[in-house]
Structure formats: C-alpha cells, structure tokens
Image (tube, rainbow, N blue to C red; front, side, top):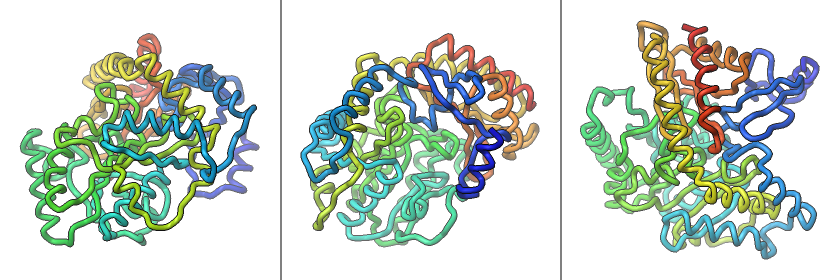
Length: 427
C-alpha cells in the first residue's frame, strides 16, 4: 500500500484529498460492506460520498450493466438511445415538474454547470444567488457559486454570485430565533438583498448542504424564498445531487420539505441514481430546457451502459421501498447517536434526516470547530471496521454518515456502536 500511495503522490495532484494517515485502497464490496487490498472488511457508512445508494455489487445492477456491455457500451447523443429515453421518462415523471425535460450528464458538477447555463440564458443575466456554506461542484462555474471557502480555490468566476442566509440553522446571526422567526428573518434578508441588485437569474440551493456538514434550514424556507423569487421571475434550482432518490426518508426529493410553493424550476441530480456508475442530470420545465439556440450534444452523458445501470437501480429502489427503509432505519440511527451525543461534551449536534446524518464536533466547553478530533474519530472508526465521512464549512467540523439505503437495523446498531467508541476515544 505504501508503494501505491507513493505512486499516487508522484503522478496525481497534491490537492487531490485522501482520507486517513495510511490511505485505503478499496478492492471490492457487497451489500453494505467493502474490503481493502489487505483483506480487511468494513461497514460502509459513506458509500463513495453518497453514491453507492442501494448496495455494493447489487446483482440487479451488475446484471444490467453486464448485459448492456455485451450489446453496446456507447454511441453518443447523436443517435437514438432507448435506455436514455426510458430513464428520462421515469425521472421526468418522478420529478414533480410539469412538462419536464431531462438532460443527462456525467456528474453532479456538470449537471450544476448545465443548470447555470440554462438559468442565465433563459433570464439573460449572469447574476446568481447561492447559499452560504454551499457546495455545488469542482468546475470553474460551480466553484464560483460555492459558499464554502475550503472548497473554493479561486474568486474568479463567469458569474456574479450573491450569498443568502438560511442554509445553516444553528449558527450565524439568526441561530437563536425560533423556526418561524428564522424563516422570516431570512426572507427579509433576501428581499433586502434583491433591492440592491438587478434581478438575478436564479437561486441555487441544496435542501441539505452536503459538503457543508449536512446542515439544513427549517422546513419551508425555500418555499418562502420562492414566493419572493417569483415576484421577479427568478428561478429556483434545487441541487439534489446528495439529497435525491429518497435518501432523506421523509421525501423522495429534498425540495419536497419546501414544496408549499410548488416544485423547483430546475432540479439537478447525480451520485446515487447510478449506484457508482457515472450519471448526472438536469430536469427543467420545457421552456427553460429548450431556451438554448445553438447546437449541443453530450458525448458521454446518457451513454447506454450508465442508463442501463440507472434504470435497474431506480427500479430496485422503488420496488423495495428504500425511501421507507431510510426513514425507519435512519430514524433509529439518529436517535441512537443523539443518545451517545448527550454524554459527550465534544458533540455539539446530531442532525439530518433519513440516512443523511451529520455529527458536529467542537472543542469541549466551547463552540469552536474541532477538526483534529474529527480526524481522530475518522481514524478510530476505520480501525474498528467502519467508514464514515467528514465535512463542514465556516468554523465547523462534522462527521458525515450516509450508508446505502438498504442498511439493516442490525448494521445500523453495529455502526452506531463503533462510532460511539470512536467518539469516546476523542473525548
């Protein structure tokens, strides 16, 4: 492994982050478990950054991929593509957006790029509203709207970005307010901001902020925002790259917790729909999707082999009610972790919904972030056979827990017990 790590450092960028003091090579997986090159078995509570949504080596998906690979892998969007049309039909139906059109990409970053292109072209302005503590991808335009300094290597951007309050409930200037007053204060801030600028193209927002540490506003905030946005024709883009497909348990899409004013104008998705295959995409009302007046294609977006995987994965998800499982098992896991947190001075908050859970860590007796302890817990959990993630934004550090949605109660209990001991090792 040291040899592979040395080779990695020799030919790959210094900024390409790796977890662990001794980085891990994962060689295979099954169900909710993975194995490393040395034969160690781990319970996977991060799923390749929320991407292995149903299970590792899910037979239904591997069969679909294998059969499609035996026919044709790729032809580009210049030719009719039956699996792409079939998956687009299903996604459009599930989206809740009227007269929806779907465009497939290879990643969430590219999906958000496309959404920004559509919104700025449709509205004929390059001003965009984004949330503080947000993350939307690695490309030049996505970095330009990311409200998380740790993931924004440049201030240069093709867009003019204005940042809005509300994505973080328990920190910031409105943290002490109750939910109703919090929403009112954020709406007042949005109205004031719009009074100082020409009307923007869109607001882009994650219903639950992923890289930012699984933070979220009170339910209904984006519905209240949308009423204000609609007064000026400003679009609402919901970034569902991490929250989509039932992960939150209570809803199929994260935006549905804010759906009182109707669905978003544009939804972006990726990660879980491919269960590890490279699928991203954009859903939009037809007049928005069709606003481009020049030719466009996608060489690898919607290629046959990824679409076959997406169809099989989506069918499995729906047929086995994995959204319901995320609600039930995730609810048990959150309550178990909250019980542990109540005994530990370094755990500030356990938050989230379904199987998207954040554990925020602070230096005991303070409200200061504790990234050192987050790394300690990550290492201790790995040593005991559990893989988790970490994240956070401005002066925060959080553990990120997002297992495959087929997680069993027994596996949730096992993971919670390991995580408890890892937390105790840090505090």
